[in-house]
Image 1 (tube, rainbow, N blue to C red):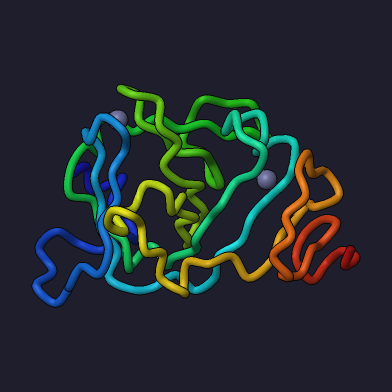
Image 2: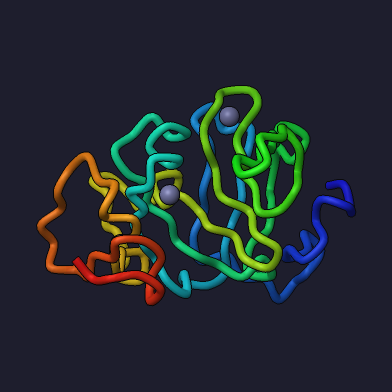
Length: 163
Ligand SMILES: [Zn+2]
Ligand SMILES: [Zn+2]
């Protein structure tokens, strides 16, 4: 792995890194592990997520980068900063697989916002409680209602109004 890319992430040489969950893109070129449960999980209904994901909403589970380590395919990673419209690794940015196009995560400076649908939770999937969204954000932009009893923020969590 390029040391430049790996900065802040768990090291492949770290013997104390015990993988808890694994994730991979559709073509399986990109594979990574996490050694912790997410610190939070949420669903974003903003129009940027709707367009970039080609989906009504985006589900993200948040990890510290130190709890994430790559197994394969770092050379296939593609980056895009949507705020600046720059196809570069300018944090925070989108990370995808250049080979199959799977969106993998939003990479922040310290945090890794993983897309849990890439994780192997078994078949049929048993989603761990820690991955379940605690709230919905940018719900004011939604194209679909979600009746799950979780808080719905019009914009950012704790910085907008509850709907
Ligand atoms: Zn791929
Ligand atoms: Zn969004």
